[in-house]
Image 1 (cartoon, rainbow, N blue to C red):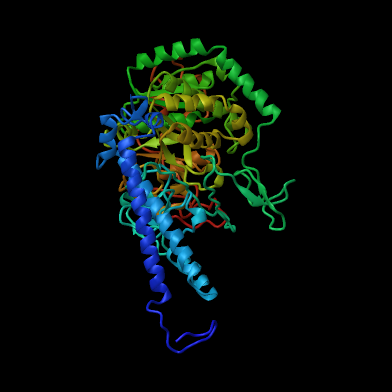
Image 2: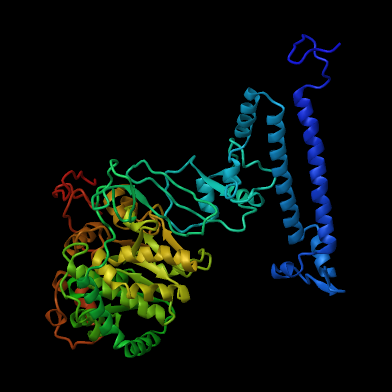
Length: 619
């Protein structure tokens, strides 16, 4: 019995429901499509019609010409047919991608052509529920997995200081193409798999790493733009008035220096004309005498008979700290034959040689550096001394010596060269003490420029030559530390310079951050229970406080008659007599004095005043 068009009945005569029809049609369509792909691959394997294009891509013996028609050589066919061959893998991957894309397209079309308006909406919803990335993102996002952050940073030592407060936190790894996704893992679903770092990167040919945090905090966003010319730098935008000022949500996003803080402070200003002129004058004095300086320095280092040089520089204003290093080292029995001091004035040269240290003094390049002490971090004297710190490292490095650079406010508990020359130490180009500060201007390394070890190679030679030529930026930014860290980041990206920060959580290399913030660690050091190799009195305003803090710690070995004095004011002995100042200047035992109750001390100093406004007794 026939029914009129549009009529209804309670009993259907159809033998299949719509979903069954869709399924059968899809199966038929997919099978025919896959058969076509498979046939195409096999035909291509036999004919190798790609010819010269295949040869241009590195295909072995790609073509031979027979009767004017290019065909695959036996080597070509062997590579195509090899089960584990690179070309075979690429062909199969391409086929899988094409088949998968065709399946998705035909299922989507069949679903919509056999469904009501409401069901069509469900077609789209079903696709969204099962796939993390829509088709519009698959040109650069094929999958996403989670990896424990600690696992990732232990598997790949990025060299940066780790954040110790990351237990239970994960990192994300995104895959650009399906071939990079770990085998048997669905990384394109809303359920993000948690993998080990090794498994997550097993199929990665390359791995780009982005380190990010949210300083402030601010409402920070990250934009990933695929199918674009590759960039290894990050562009930063901030809502602000482009004419000046800091973060202001009433303004549009503007391209912004990474050195602009949210309160509007500019951490990386461009050098002024005065900064440039001052730098040019210092650099000119060096370049005009460079050949002779290098020759004389080589003779000096050759005479020392060492491979690794401990490099230090000092002016007279800091000379008692240099003397304390030498006296404390001698009291502990260290041989200082590797130490080479670059004094910036004749007075410091005489003192250094008087306590038994080798010196290299060049008045032509050091004459512009003041003899007095810096009153605070970044003042004019401080910046002038920075030139000497850069120059002495660059010169020794250029002569192909590994070196350890140290500020004069350092004492040794053990010989640090034994640590850095240990063959079991993971090899990096440069190792830095962790400064401890996490200000944006020191990101991402927070490298302390007062204690670091350099392996000589072409990467480090280029780095320190570049730093030497960047004196105008050192003048503008008040310190070479910021400039050096900026160059470390650039050289890490450009040349693969490997940088390792000796994290502040390690016991071996404590400094100012421990002295001012970690009382229990300081007590371990002074009880002799720590694994500390050195101590660096960083994070301290001026020389006077450094001296007092060392006295409280039991690390001061300089007699009062040698503090702030010239050679002739200490002894009547002839200038240049090696070691003549050791007896009058060096104490065999530490000279301990209390100054402040709220700073670490080897003895109780509870009756002393506090130096900090809210300072509490260390004991």
